[in-house]
Image (cartoon, rainbow, N blue to C red; front, side, top):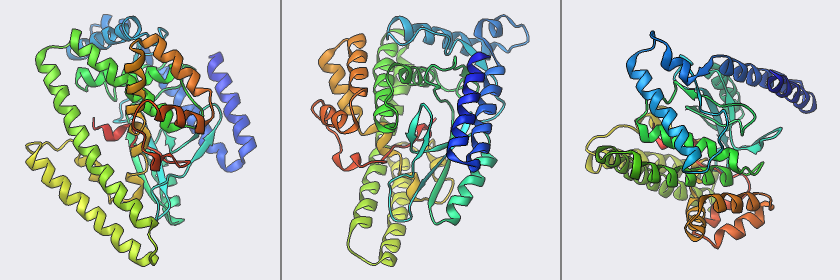
Length: 369
């Protein structure tokens, strides 16, 4: 409760500093977090409850084992996070609003206490997120609202396992837990790309190790297929993102840029349908990405989760020891943003074009759960 009161005080202070228009946003954030924590119970209590279905118990037991593996084998924080479970009775824990100018893929940023400036604005209610998004659209922005199955409070709270991802395949649950725990290891306020790419690198290394000892051959094959489809999809998105950026940067009337923008979106839709049938045998797991009209905001976060991953993987390969790797990343996080990019560039391919202030990735929803 003390932590909750501290968070509430922080939120109210922040709202007073940033204006009355922000009060409602901070209040919903605090209320949403308090509601989430109040609904969480230790996993062992769920396992001991005879009313809990066997299938859920099995999944919770596996989540418990994944959590123990994260601490013992991956050196991730051994605290109260992911040792409890909350049934939220909704498809996502929150919904993120991402916005860009009409002729840019650079996301709008919002700045908050502790987290710094980030490329999205989160709501615990889809209706509230959509209402805010509609206001941005009326101002001329391209906007996307996307559901988020999990997030990290950076160790301020004991984050629970959630009903929003417990039904995923085991490798996916492991990926989620490893990723979110990584945010507690190293975090650079105001640098979403650094934070998310680091967590993505940790999740990749972690799942590879976990599958090698904990998974069976069928599980490893399913994960291999998932990784390949994700790589295919991200490559397709990245190619069209670059086309959009070339279009927006060229010297041409805005009307011409709008026409070309629509052509690029249409091309993406066609190529996706072709890839889905020709390469994936009809797998439709990414169809939800096209559930609303395409906009620049769909592309705004592609860089955040992925563009720096090769650099972090290169750094890990050079060190080849997770505790030392974490210490090195924590030291890098303390540098200023330009120094971080220059150093990471020496460890792996970094997309220099994506290093402009505010450039981001495709929030975890793209990783296709």
